[in-house]
Length: 235
Image (cartoon, rainbow, N blue to C red):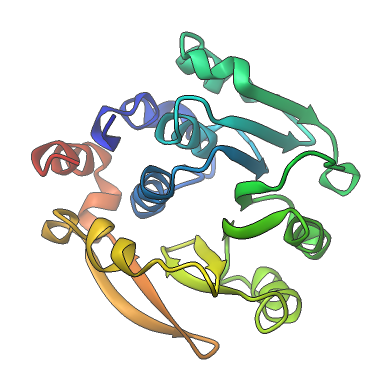
């Protein structure tokens, strides 16, 4: 499946609340392409909301992937359920309605972890999740450019656990282990055909070179135009 065929993307307006969407066009594209390329089989998301990001994860990941969702409040889960009720992957999801500080995992390590919980708990969430990653795992931190998340990254992650940043959007930053190469993904996979309507450039993040993706404002403001571009460029 391509992102232009995604049920989540086609129904993106249903996920908006009074603050807008949790994930804009750049973030949705990056989340999809990371899962499409690295094919994680065990995924964890902390911070579900209405399930916009989670919908992308279950659509882009392999058929037999397993998922764990942690959130203290699933009051908007009905949006996700209505859209994905016929997806056979639903049976592979464990929904845990708990505070992330109470989350305990004794199973195998995760291939992909997305942290989008409360900013007050980010240090605890990050510290806990770092023990749940292996050398081929991908970690994604939401709101990396806010003071709380940036501080957690610099104090808990960079230079301490051999996980380094390699990709960033407007809100999201992706990390991988130093022994895990993402060169082909960065140079070709993520940019192929998307260069026609997205911008890619290297940026410095605390001494690390990170590929920064950006979508022109016209596609951010007009989601249907972005969807048309995805379809036109066969993405």
